[in-house]
Image (tube, rainbow, N blue to C red; front, top):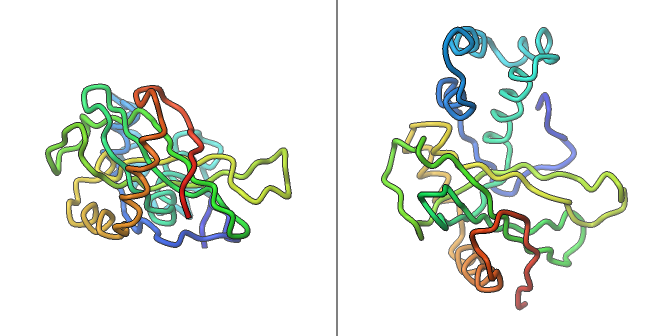
Length: 198
């Protein structure tokens, strides 16, 4: 049972990745005494943390991020620009029915945190994401948005990251490449709806 994620839905390919406390703190640029404090506190079991400290923004975000990587969906992604940290992730936002809602999200990721492999522009990587409902339209058949993160930025466990990458079907890479041909400015952050052939 999750603490922050809606249990009424589940990922077809969950990340199943355990992230590192210290990589998480690196991601949020947490330094000094604050880093020492959270470096100890975040090792407490998440169920206890949630019960006692869910009001704390850092603690709550830590739990959400952990659940994103264990329960969230694995997506194909590619590094658009290594120096700028730009990554493009592809998914289908459809939540009900079989009418596809293909999208690409271009986001900035802290690729400098990746220590378990070399990276370059054009490189295929995986992302793991949680999906968000459209709260203004209760009967929407598609998620409003998704929040992809690069697992290599949150753990140095190369086997776990490679396992995540291997979950991506060959067709998904083809879909990502085709979707990217429809985006004129690939270095502009945002969510892009694309058209895919049947």
